[in-house]
Image (cartoon, rainbow, N blue to C red; front, top):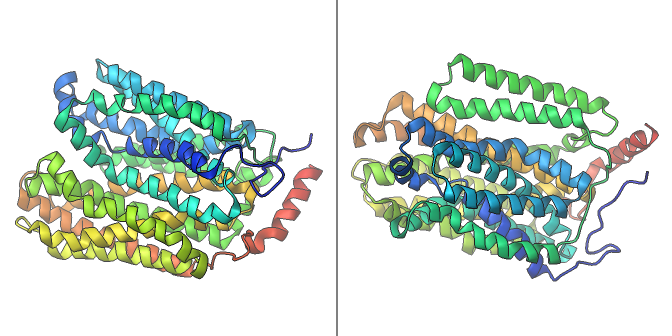
Length: 488
């Protein structure tokens, strides 16, 4: 059987719609999925009162989404390559919309947790495939700008989550957080069905053993990281879950070398650029989003701002990428991505150093603004280019897999960052008083700054983006592996 192949806008099959419509169909779906990662955090007190639950129930309302999202990100990318990326994307969009309606109607914690898990599964289908569908739906000349726009939507959605949640809770009630997705999803489905054309990866056969292994491995790692917040890093359950997940993922690398139709081709990680770019993504999300989690609590629990007021005061951070991200694509076209990736990571690291030196019980908000702006500019540069840099080191046929790997690692970074920095916070401070919060927050900031500084070093060691748009020096290895696969 002849493998189905991708055909981009510069190949034989033309785009079904103009680039703006393709960006709308993919970008809005991505924004919804990213927003729901954190939008619920400020509504948890209202949910606790209405559904009469405890802290464990509230934790699972948040974690159910994170768990299914992280576990199924890469699996959805693989299934999309085999069954059709447009088909899986539309299925995810429909599932996310339906699950949002169920969450809005939930009258118990168990129903809400189940709906959040289905939302996470739908989001896992949306996020990696939205990028692949976007880059195959625009001309190569516009690809850099399209990826920058996609990345901006992703970063802004996560950063604006607490602010949007605060606005909704301030003027409405918590079900509105989920109801708002329903009309948007219903309107977006026909737009996506019309504007997106079907595309496939090079392989036609599934790797069921690989799918099961990656699912179990990701489940063990992510579940273990989630448990650390409540159980601590020394908990036997945490250690068993992390060790088991890591062991399965290690076994996966051995299996994929022998599989006739590998789900995760080893050729991807033979590229130093691909591997290092993904490591940068993992480190930045680990360092920065652990801080975001604590910073929103600092503004409320220490400085005394209400949820909406606290969200407004994060706008220098969250809105700066809106201005910066569109400027990065033409600059990266001229000078390459590497210098700007170094700049973006350095700015984020410096922002965390600034916070570590200035936060206190009575710190004026004006003292935080330079750090917020530096973090926002750095995040705008970083998120606009990280997906582009990762895709630059793979062939067009592997873009779906590369997107799945990158998004899965970024989500692991978010979960690991929150778990690690909360542990650092708890070792030196607590939520009991503003003074104790600051005592824990400052060490967490220094750890976050160290992690992001390490990301800047790795970014500097990443090879320059191939200027011809090819996957670089791995092409000969790719041809050899294609020949081996065809022979088998």
